[in-house]
Image (cartoon, rainbow, N blue to C red; front, side, top):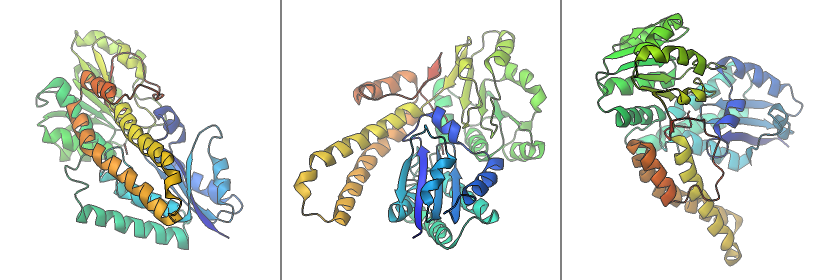
Length: 385
């Protein structure tokens, strides 16, 4: 009998290094879908790969065989049938996002579904599921206040840059990449009054379009060293499988900067910026996600612990009622942490975030994701969405 299975890893369950291994770039999705469909017992497949999650939605009599398409040493979460459908509804509604309620995930899920349609890997079950989930996500944002403030990882990054540097209006900004996250970042920077903005992308026409919309100019990749020498802020968000900015290359530029500070913000998965860049004099690499993810993980762990401690008191509950109690408990924890999370991201600053880690005991008994060396501010493990 066919069943629906979701397999995945997200910012909640896996550090950046693991998510980098699982990330699929645009050109890799269709071949991967074909690989899944070639496995006996799989009849439908959709792959969702964003900065903060990679998930396989597969249907078939041997849906578990999809696990063989992923690295065997990576821990994945899995849900089946109704639980898998419920998970997708939560994802598309923004409830599983790093910034709860962010709207970008709706478009990312839509594009993942459209890619699967184009590759002819969907079927009756996935078609019905994804269309219903997308409609639900739209309704959630229309009928609730979940998207109040319209926060996103890009806007959080720009807020942190403002916190670190003050007024951004006179800052020289270089954006590497011209995709959705780069567009969101450019919009947020433009709203902060940034007037000197340069966009570098291998697709020159896309970079030119983005620059025109937000009053910037384009720059060729070959001219990056010159722009790095002038920049105050560099935001990297490409879909490259390799590092775009290495420590050695940046090190050659640093002497030309005459001691001026440089703020690097890496929003790509896999990473665009070598973490070792943070070791260079005057260079700061922003990173907020480890603290945000740790806080939410801490809340989930408390809920799970309390549910386990009280499990014997609920013998009379049906399985369905037990699921409702668990869902309600997790929803309460997320609702309580939602506003503190937004304020924490807006606050920025390593000292304040470290204080939050101490107040909530986030460094006690929790194995943190591997952090890059050097002067790294907790602003983004890099990535969402």
